[in-house]
Amino acid sequence: MTTVRWNEGWRLGVAKMDRQHERIVGLLAGLESACAGGSGEALEEAAAEALDYIDYHFTMEQRLMEEWDYPELGEHVDEHDDYMVQAADDLAMLQDGAEPAGAVLGRLADWWAGHLAGPDRRLAEFLREHGVK
Ligand SMILES: [Fe+2]
Image 1 (cartoon, rainbow, N blue to C red):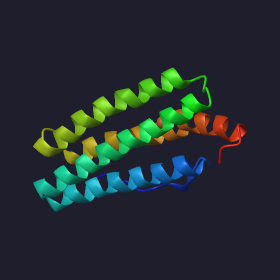
Image 2 (spheres, rainbow, N blue to C red):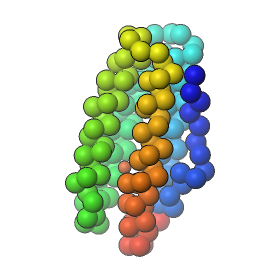
Image 3 (cartoon, rainbow, N blue to C red):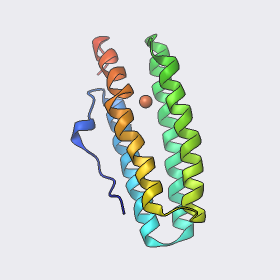
Image 4 (cartoon, helix red, strand yellow):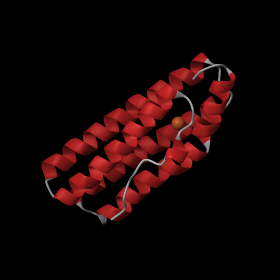
């Protein structure tokens, strides 16, 4: 089973983003524990909570991008939208057991590693240049 853990290298220097990213990793770790625990109800709750919070976080980032007229807004929001579709599918799959949980969790978490290292890092650099901390 994958182990989802916060990595300090993902810290981007914009407090609101960092705080929410850390929470998301925590929610994914909670999802992993719920899978291991074997309770369908706990898994459903953890999946709904993660999806809701990720949606809330993406909306927050989109607002920041709009506020600061971020030039990569379109591509960045497309990535978020794609992930919401993928995550909803993956979470449904976790609940019906159509694919091994480790593979699904790995896919859900790996996306974040790539997104934090690429698009979110560029966004945070842009925001910091504009004085957002
Ligand atoms: Fe993002």
